[in-house]
Image (cartoon, rainbow, N blue to C red):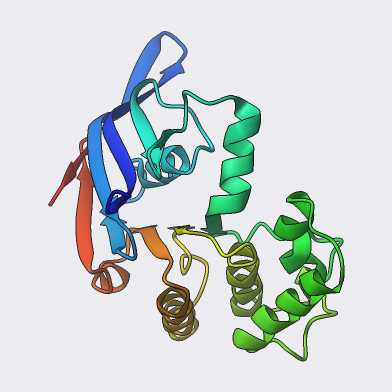
Length: 225
């Protein structure tokens, strides 16, 4: 098995705005090894989230190829790509993306239920993850009853539910104060270390970026570093 869990080759992404074309990414190439922690930084609006969405198969590149565990994301059907995301990837977003009608425990269970898992084992693992992020007493609380930091901890637990090989984090501290943000980063790094999960995170915050084993900068549509 290759040491690379993710390979992106000559990836570009363009958008049409009326009569104009905006080239956001211009030939991005990236190799990420298993268990590596990679942070991609750059100013706001440069295309970091666009790149992360492409790496996770949430969007389709204009040109180029992205492979996870040697499997080309965009050579497979949409159904297979969705299944791969569910089984092999975990996502943590800046805006948490929790389902408002579900409590914390139910939100964490969602990836396992989507994968077709049922039974007490699902709830046991969700409870264990919520305890690991310090929310054992908040399992029945809905997102509106939780602080921003607590919602992000639920989101991290949800991302780890299916034991992902690759964790993608999009500005995970962007909506948090610095103290809470540091706590979330400590938690994210610890859970990544304990599970052996590979982490790719994008951020515009240079303080956050310093945590990466490898730090790359996205500038003018290309990765530098």
